[in-house]
Picture 1: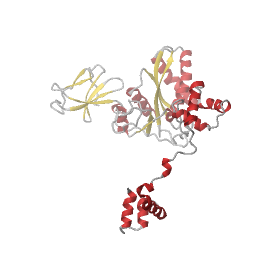
Picture 2: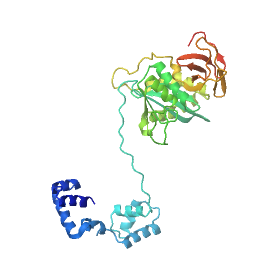
Picture 3: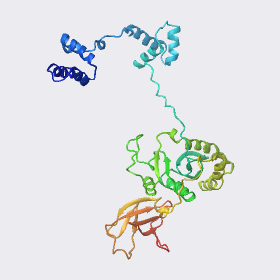
Length: 378
């Protein structure tokens, strides 16, 4: 159809042969050949006759049938390489291995092997401590009869562990705790590298890309502090964390058993006071460059950021309903009341609560919803 259009324009003198050839994406000589074929046989003269001809190298139907019947009758379940050796040595087969393999696969007699993983190259470590922090959790039977999650937060540049502790289940609170320990110990870091756990990221399609606009509680806190978040899309991408967990799973259970440690409280104390310092001393490596990317934290109170924040609307009785609790807002000098006002409930890592109106903290509560009177204004 494109040729007929170009041919008519050329035949009417509207374009030259060079322009017609350029329109079709061919050279002038090819366009002239097309003209000759078109004038002799019409549009059918332009068809590629090779498409309607069978290859002279194609195997006859009876040969294909003989091969598939041989496999189904005598060698079903053999892999292709194994079958091919019998096919050539015992049955006089002369076809290539690739032809035999493709024929068996085309008839669904053998399955295609999964695609091999691409060649991976180890990612260089970050140049400075504090440039990239890893955080991850591992479920394992760390003590006999108990499955706990070990949460570690370590530096990509040196492998130094800044936080290690056991929890019953990995989640937002444990992730906040690891970041809190790191900032308190070293300062604010540049980025954090995590898996795609639901407490780190929202993933609209399972196994797909993370949603960097719809932030989780953890993502909101990192954004608030200016810490970049990096999502890992395979276990290989988190190789340093995975290798560390392999070492911990080999060593920690033996040490805890040797010391007859059976409770999580005792295990966490051992991690903090003994195991982590000794592990860092043995396994830390020097950074590639002198210096540090850590910055001393000089912002607002850290616990007000590393917490869960929920928006609520105040009821007619100046109360806020939150997780089955009714939190009463006391009268203050700033407003007559807070009815219908939107406030934020902060839930801290230890379960305590507070209510904020804008930047102002209105009231504190313990984990049961009982008001806590503080001596100084927050």
